[in-house]
Length: 336
Ligand code: OGA
Ligand code: NI
Image (cartoon, rainbow, N blue to C red):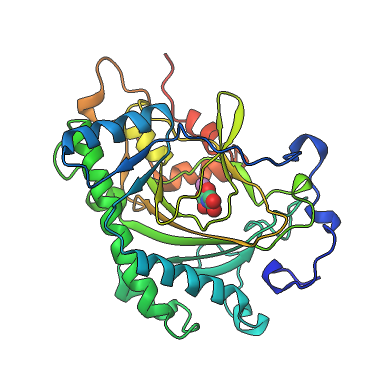
């Protein structure tokens, strides 16, 4: 069968490989809207209040949405349309990018990189590539749709600016040395786009694994179709799609730097019976050399984690922890 689900047409039933065993199925899908997930207006006239809202959100939910964030709405729409078109391109063109090699800087895959060996497949295609430094990577990007490179380069510059604006607020809120999150700790900048076609039976399938983001911080542009859920107090709650709002998720590296003050939420994506869903994720993460450790200024008595590099973390993540990032993090936690 065709691997990429974006190449399927007239899908009337869920193929067996996509049906999760009972205990992993999401069951009846409801989209309860959670109004508690903080929605922060970055144009607020009281910057110190806004910083406090961001810090509180990182401590209580580990996820929040922002409006008046400075990324131009037309650019957001254009980028979303580019990706919707990209996934509709002929299979032969997309096949040029297909790869399950994590070291490939621009790659298209379906389900996860473990497609060939996994027992069950997730209902998604994913397109990922590096964005920084732009000149180093732009030639590896698609040239179809024709405006891809033009639009996505502008989008990657604008979203990177927003991510640094948020990191600067976190830096101020935690009273860290100015520029703490600049340089090696946030050097890796990747765009990762998920595409899910409508699924005939969402209660049997998952659009993305239950996971936590292992990087420093994630920015997510949702489309108007719900699907993202976070686990809060033992319940799955939906992250409401708000037109032109942007979702932010502190990753596990930030949790370490905050000396365990921040939450990195466990989340997943469920599928939708009627609508296709496309989301654009922008991930900032450390360079391979960067040493991750609790910020000295935040350690009162003892650091909660020992220092490690991101490659060390990823090794534990893929080997010992079977891709459970929170579990992998415990490997670096100091005993109390
Ligand atoms: C991710 C992620 C959520 C979504 O890419 O890590 O959680 O809604 N994406 O696509
Ligand atoms: Ni995620």
